[in-house]
Length: 628
Image (cartoon, rainbow, N blue to C red; front, side):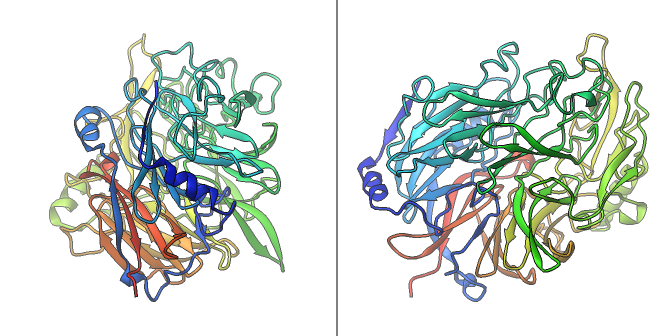
């Protein structure tokens, strides 16, 4: 069941034994800290010298053959992992669920762990975003925890990479047990790192988006030492629980979706866990789930110790657009009337940023419930209103007119104009209808799992977003089909509004990087993110992968489909540095200070491929300043 390949494991034992327990110069969590701010106090690299960055080391994980030949024929296989660094050791997960430990300053492999299994089965996506780290209060015990495609929650000794045999069954817990047993062919997997609160490991799961019946999306907490279940939160409320009345009749029963496939955040001071919850399945048809569908499309706050509901805020009612809450919530502070408000920001696929009081869930800027278009699909009951925050303004366009059609080339203009005139669209929240429909933003956003980083000094939230629409029509299905209607098009279920080159059909920018002042609710600056090499104009590109920010005022991001890694001035949005990578970096970078060299490193995964089917690589790249 297990395969471990040690390489100088003794070196990691020495490194960890000599290290301090906590260091602000490390990167101990996927999001930099438990609250997902993705900010670092390390400031050796600054706005003046970032232009001098050079490649420090390159690590190839050795999965190109597997990705290119075995898996990528039928699946989407991006390299989305963000490493963590503790005591001079860098840990990351690979697209095929391996975990690898490297010397953080040289890139030399220390150990790798292979879970041996789980790479086959009912999956469309093979991605994994990272691992979590736990350390005992005394500091003598440390573990790496992560979930797998075949729904195992695994605990590894951080020093050796060997399974912690006392955790569950020989080092793992079967997450399918009690949830997915009745659906042996259904997808149930973990693609994002779990959250850690004290001695609990908290995990969600990826579940089917079609059909509507399948494994539940409930969130669970396990004892980090024994693997025993401590609490369960029903993301679809059971009878007698708050929110159950939002489901009509028995629509809640055996309903899949309403899950946390993305990254959770934890407020250690207040003992709260924050869950960004996805939509109910099936994504695009809700005729069999009439109502608001709680806790679908909600940000939910739980008592992290017990799993009890504290508050929730629903950002899409009765979702029929696949507008999951995709991003890790960001714990922020809002300065107002001479005081500080403990707050939280949730990025959305719609391009909205919801800023809420972290302790109560109440919006800190006004939110209006506005009427939205009706559905013409038989049996559907689109919710009549949706919440529109008045601040911050939307990060992307939410509707398109004829004047928005791209003129980037005459050929693109002709193709896109003809396509546009063939589509139905009635503005934001237009449901997919019986005729081909334009929906803006599409399923990739707006924002996505890329999320945001936060600089507490300026109050700026740094967000990359897609300006990309989707097209589709709701097609009637056979009587024996699991749902009455299913989204489709000539290009498949997830067609985009783009031309034959996959250039978006509206005028640029097609991808942006923005700074949002959370104190005022204003967008401070916005710049195009990415280039299309064949075009002269700086158009921006579709992007997946997030930002980080340092106290020296530098924002780092890959994300774009042009195989570049960039640095921006956090104050102005000016591009300060750019370098070419082996492939596009659809991952979030991270940074840390080397213990031995005293040098700051910035690391990013460059794997390409994924949704945009670009050039693939298996590269983990580290950058630092040259020696003086």
